[in-house]
Image (tube, rainbow, N blue to C red):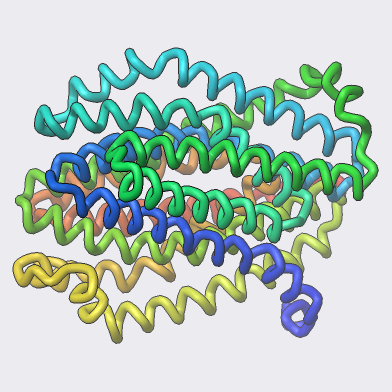
Length: 445
């Protein structure tokens, strides 16, 4: 272990993959901030409410289909590790075929889907009207947005994180620029914000396809036309992995949705305080996601190469830096948590509520890092079934903890969330150790 930590090339490999993704993640909240600022300066509050509700609908829909990126990363990284150029080409074609299939299906079915969602929404009539407008325009970007998942996953699997970084940055910068032009310049209001996102998605897809083409030529992969005939070969493995990751994502979404709705039952100040504290959780997510992506790519490469020594080095190096960053985040939350809350909200009642639950958040970095990292390990190894099962058990644990502590109000929700993260990491850790000892995780090493 110490020998691995002294290896400068290992640290370079980890950061070459993790740092670009961390930097590109920064543009995500920036886009949300600009959206809120631009729409928030219109003359009625329901414009902002409509974009918030419609945007949430779109984000959840796309997020549930995020398995397209994860599955593509894991399988591509294994093909890259085994130097199988045919497999590297086929997985990209298969992923794009699925992305466009799902994207077109969303466009065709968006009206009944939105009607069902709005039926259960308690938003006002004006907010629903503008949310529906936003959703009905933004959904046309689905084929491009889902294709971008595959492009990012494929490039990461090929051990290249710089190109996905530029893909995200350019897409979000285009979105921000068009937001300002369409909403403030042309006065298109909610429709302008939605159109800006659609154009940005397709701009990103065009740029991403150009990145892939350059990589394709540099690596001398088989001609694309030749691989189109092989699109069905091995599709079963991709579909099975996608299914398992999708079910995992449903469980994850269930916990966060329940936390939001249950918090709302506890009062306006509590739900507002939880929204403030969730920004702490997002900060951890943006930092840890970069190292989870690195873990996916590096583990997949080592598994594809059937190189146990290489896999051990990657596990040690990525875990070391994740632990170090988690300790830094914990120190920031402990020392400056109250000040950060004050920056996010200047409402005294919300600040007081958020301060009351801040101790739970100080535990998040060190608890959550394990579920992020081990997700990366199992994605890289394309062991979707293990991820699905662990997430299901952790979700059951989440609701069990909340039910047992429900008399403690919002403390029960945060205890359940911390327990949920601990269970996710703990169950995957136990499973990994078991597979490692039985020599199943890397059977032909």
